[in-house]
Every structure is written in C-alpha cells, then in structure tokens.
Length: 371
Image (cartoon, rainbow, N blue to C red):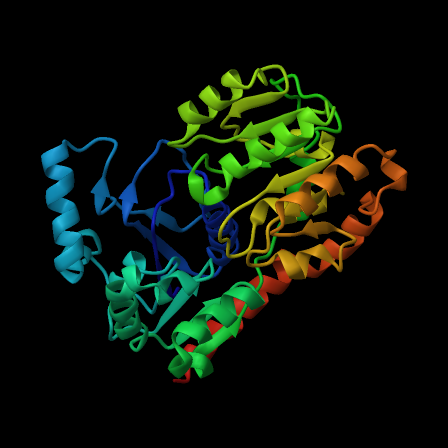
C-alpha cells in the first residue's frame, strides 16, 4: 500500500479545510496509508480521519506547551523546517501533499513527488508587507510537481502571483458527502434556534468579516428587521463581538451560539448562511447549506461565483447597501416567493460530489508516478 503524507496548518480549530481533509482521508485511506502532520495544535477540536490514517505529533503545540517551549519550536519551524519534519516523520512517503500554503509547504521534502494544495486566494502575497512570504513560497513551489486550486478565483490568484507556475496548476473542486450531511441534519438539537433566521458559521475573527456582519445587522435592525442572527463558532473576537451586541441592545436578536460539532440541523432551519469574509478558497459552509436547500449571502470571495448559480443559489456583493437591501427585501417575502429557493439549491449542488473529487485526486497521483 502506497504512503501519503499530508502537511496541514492545524486539525484543531474546526475550519473548512479541516472538514475537507477529513472527507478526503476517509476515502483515500481505502487505498493508501496516510499520515497527517500538522504545523500546530491551536485548539481542542478533533476531526475524524479515515482508516489507515495516523495523526502525527504536531510541530508546535500552543495548547499544551509552555510559552518558552512554544516559541523555541516556532523558531525551529521558521528556520529549520526540514529538521523538525525529520523529528516528526520517521518514514518515507510515495507522495507528499501540503494541504495549505506557506508553512505546510515548507515541511515538504523537495525531492518527493508532491502537490501544493491551495484552499484560498493568495493575492495578499502581492502586498509589500508580504514580500518575504511571496519570495519564500515561490521558491518552495518550484519543488512541487503539481499545484491544486479549489476554485477559479484561487487559480487566478496563483497565476497572478506566480505566472511561471501556470502549467502546474490543476483545478479540483472540493467534494462532499451529501448523504452524510442530510442524515446529520435530522439529529436533535441542543440550541433553541428560531426558524428562517440568518446564520453565520466560522471562526470569529476579523478576516471573516464578523464586525461588518454585526454592523450590517444593526442597520437592518434600525429599519425594523427582527429576524435573528446566529453566529456559530469560536475565535479571538468573541468578547469584542459580545460587547458590540450588548452596547447596541441586540442580545435578544444576535446570538453567539458557540462551536457545535453538528451544525446541519441549524443550517436546515435557517433562511440564508451569511459570511462577509475578506478572502476564502471555497467556502465549505455554503456547499453544506446548498445540500440542504439553503442559499447564501456573501462578499465576492473564492468559490462564491461558481456556487451562486447566477444568483439562484447565492447573492454576492461587496457593497454594504446592496447586501442590506437584498436581505431586507427578500426576507420580507414568503420562502416560495424568494429568488433563492430550495429546489434550485438541491439540484445545482450535485456538481460538487465527493466521487468526482476523489476520482480527480487519484488521477493526479497516478500522473505523479509518470513524472
């Protein structure tokens, strides 16, 4: 049985890339022996990995290590990534896959048959403040056989930053086990969730546009909007969000629901999933929503144009007023009279099946054997 090493940023924060990793390893472990090496343990979330999958000891451990030990390991990671990798990985692999950009890619053996998997757009590397990262990551990409982009926007961003690697890029959409999502959506819930409410699901951090979201809700509220907004997730901005909510007397209407292992029953009951991120690779939560017949509202980030189905499954805008007016107008209608309706979502999402994704990954691995 051939061996694959996945290097990832983390498996402990419950993000979209972690869900994708879980799904992929469950399928590939039927045919491959897989190890997963995470750059760091930064939370206590645990993902399910497939059979024949071993989660190696993380390079750094912010949860359990002392501050001195943590900083020392970060120093080694920064300046001696190959050294720390050899400590964690005791075997040779047929394929090595960096499942996020930057640090996971630095841990890949430059002599290995390898894939750089990009979950998000990387235009930020064009900023002056990111110049060193741009140069460093560009040098590392030269050692990879293939570069995977998970959306057209991600692909375009890679070409914009590194046009010299255009011919290495493969587009592989994330695949999803829709049957599993539907089954989990039938489970009993612990949170009192009001039907036809807005729902955010993700990390509570500035990059996810959480403050733009609560400000948007405040504008809607001042216009008489009274449907609720639930924010599911944890993150560094939780306390600041709670202060904003309380200071604006929104405690009854904007609910910080915390992390939930199974968000699907709540997604199924919501009106839209809403996320105003600055950057995304391919928002897993929108796919999950569409598989349950629930559309989305979003800023224009990676994957949203493909998933929106020309507005029949999602509304996209970077204009605050457009977002506000769309929500106010559409949620005043009965469900069957809205632009985004359940049947359109359920039909369109069939294009993102797990079977299609796994088939493309296996084909890509076979191509590496011939290089």
